[in-house]
Image 1 (spheres, rainbow, N blue to C red):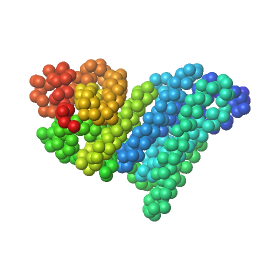
Image 2: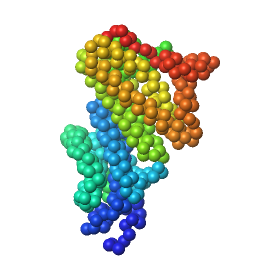
Image 3: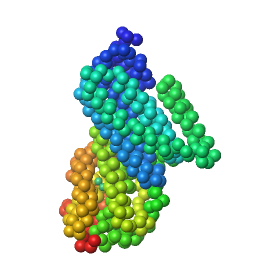
Length: 446
Ligand SMILES: [Fe+2]
Ligand SMILES: [Fe+2]
């Protein structure tokens, strides 16, 4: 083993090799470290996919928030690692992807029959990942590899939080009901078979004969505490125009309700994150941040409504997901309409709402809007940066950011039944377009 040139190791084969077999007892060369870190990047990336992909099938909104946070953290870990790899010989190229076997391990492990089984899979894979991190940490020299060691330490800070949260979701469930207990035991066995097949490069084991509940089901679930807005009368096509949705329609506090509906935006981005292949890692890093921000906006909206004495059953909320099998273009259009219509159009509302909240002496609500604007500005930039590239990838179609935004506006105006001859003109003027697309708030009423 010692005279083997490890810089030539086949990456795919390497992934099933234990750290202990590589240059045992020797200093790692920079290119060795880069290779070992690459494996960790793909683990982090797949962990972020599985967590985002499982937000829609969950019911408990607190757990959805947790997964939005965890998916972001896994993506940030991948970002830190890939930055370090870039400093070493062996950067991750724009065309590099998760090695197929590793991706399948995660995808198969994510097809869980229920939330408890999913969290078991998640904890199982998180543990495998952190075993790798710890093995690598022990191989590093504290002078030569200090910058790498610092990053691994950063990753390790979150280990317990991931594992404790996951563990709480299945720790006592198996004893509750016999059938679920059986399903759970079967799933546990399946996970260890899956891992054995991966690490010995054997054929994948057959999956248990139970319908998977996730990831990314055609339609996301709403927490039962959140009434569903299912009826969409023809006259209320403009966003948030139906008075049945919220008792705050005549108040500036409607802003909090709008925020509280943003879980559906977060989860829609989760569908995109899970489904779209062949985009560079930098896209997923931005998308992860975007997704988590929408999760935060949701959390801040819900928290404020409750603080102000409202209850969730006074409002109606949206589900996420396409609702059916969709063409790839659904993802590109959804991303364009979010970053080029909903988000830029929301600025005016947020600025005016913030000013009104300051006037009414509601400091916290005013600061909500200020943070919201900071985040949204970044999301609009993400859209300009990635929208055209996403279009090219998913629709096999070249388009400029300018054209894409115009196209998104025309689609929206068509949905709003604006006569064809007027659409072009309205789409050209941004403020006029936003006036058409959304209803304004009543800023003079608290
Ligand atoms: Fe938002
Ligand atoms: Fe946003």
